Length: 403
Ligand SMILES: Cc1ncc(COP(=O)(O)O)c(C=O)c1O
Image (tube, rainbow, N blue to C red; front, side, top):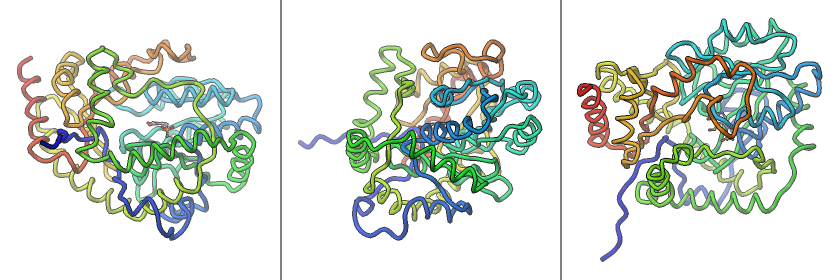
């Protein structure tokens, strides 16, 4: 009898790759396709979103040597403070608005001053942050904004693409993101002076590293083969379940990051794969948006559940806030190891990662800790069918009602 793997949904809705993406003609380079879609002059491809941020900060720090701090939300990807440190700078943590993933503007204003080099408004899970406030606060302190749109390629704010409203922006092309070349990042800047400086900084700090590029190419080929319901148990779910059995939440969430992350050039083959897949991205965003619109009401009708929504965002997953940590954990106990794409976003607020050193501002971030304690995510992959989605809703409702 043939072994038939149990189908599994990924934790985020990434654009699946097809065989045709792996070879053949390329209409235009990935960087040009992305620039024309985003309506910017140019995009710069780096080997990850983290690398894009590192390159930008390295360039920025050379032109404002007295400004050493970068203000970031106290709840974000731990790679962000690692990139800031790699550029020789200091992350300053800013608490969130209560119940929100976005920085509290008053806290941000208090954190900014003549020492501030940049402010990083951060879009999470396709939901958009308040870039206008961040711009106003950063600019009045003489700093620049770097929009972290790692999780929001294609999201719009008042019709304009997230990532293009700040002075600088970056996107992630990592595994599971809207568009993926397994690991990659796109950097954009409004000002051509900065674009030129970023190119130069990249030439200086980013090298060819055949070992890394071969590894990423193999990983991308594996991703194309296995990023499908029948392959995801093997590529993702089984190691997730092993980590959960060990009680290793950081491993389960894939957050065991290293300060020594790679900085290398992206080769032609991976660029071409991204360029071929790019043509399907906006259709995929529309399909996932339609699915989310159909599913949000069922979740929002569960008493005590808050579903984060906005007008122009993208929908890699549905982000939920539950009434308290015990309920959130009870839901995760039943669903994280299921094959239905239920997960946690980031396990902790930044001060609570053991591998990150203490950061200024980190001693006063109650809202970030509360957000980390009460949120969970449900995949918006088109592979999670209605029956499985209804099962997820039923489990959440049962947990809430029973408490
Ligand atoms: C909010 C945020 N910022 C930055 C990054 C880093 O991007 P990358 O994984 O491409 O290095 C991520 C990664 O998921 C992220 O979620």
